[in-house]
Image 1 (cartoon, one colour):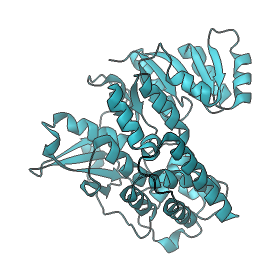
Image 2 (image 1 turned 60 degrees about the vertical axis):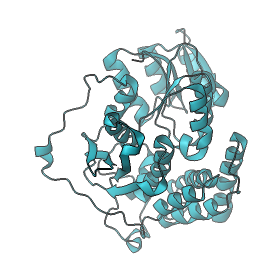
Image 3 (image 1 turned 90 degrees about the vertical axis):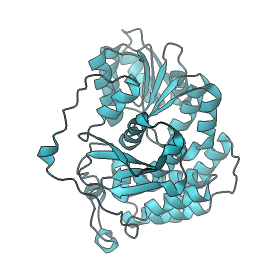
Length: 382
């Protein structure tokens, strides 16, 4: 069981919940990182006493250094600082909960340093694909999923006697705030409308991804890499209550699912305590309180972002990286009121189709494709 953790993205939704788990079980937090939230980071430093802290924003790093000058914590900044946290000698597990492509390089560096990876940054596998999985195999590194859906599949697979016993995996989706709506209903929805998620408390970017269902498309790609599955053996089902977090189907058509209240501290804790199970800060699920659980086919006509991701992984190569990069930029534009809700799927799809055809890509290829996809979105909107 891990005791020494480097937590990347400690001030976000997953990061703060990860610290709840660390607090409960007395884990040592060796490193913390954040984008620019100086005040919350100062509180975390004073409680958990990490040896190293990174602020991605250089000015935030300078401000933090002044605020915690009375501590022994070293402050670094930028991507170099984030990588320093990822490879820190004193940590055995890196929990990567940063949002976006910024998480790819530190994940690769942590794998190279033979750290166990607790992965909440789905963009790492979406954009990095075989770069990540091959490097993990070469270094004998475990990638333990933190996303609730992939953790559910991982947990259900613990009883699997052999890989060929699995017939398919089922990813559940909440459907977001616009479930049941048609494209015409969504023409004039605002960012405020899209941020009203029915079940989960998440950051703004991921909440918008849930509203467009891009999040489920990205998880579809991530599942392919995490579990080495054929694309046709991954199914998406909308489950409004977010109680069944995902499931697997065996060759005998027996289905094994993982259930729990919608609280990210369950998958976070399982990644940190695996293969053990410990008491949790999360309340016990009462099926009687829910009464019934519902399931629906996704509406692929209205929520076209799922198709963008499915097409991207079918095309392979750098197409998923382009789709992801475009999405990060288009979500920013939507949150800023610069584009409409439906524009997100359009921009993501056009950028994805323009990705260069390179199968054996390098990290630089991924970074170049990501940058080109973002530029394409910005130029198209102009």
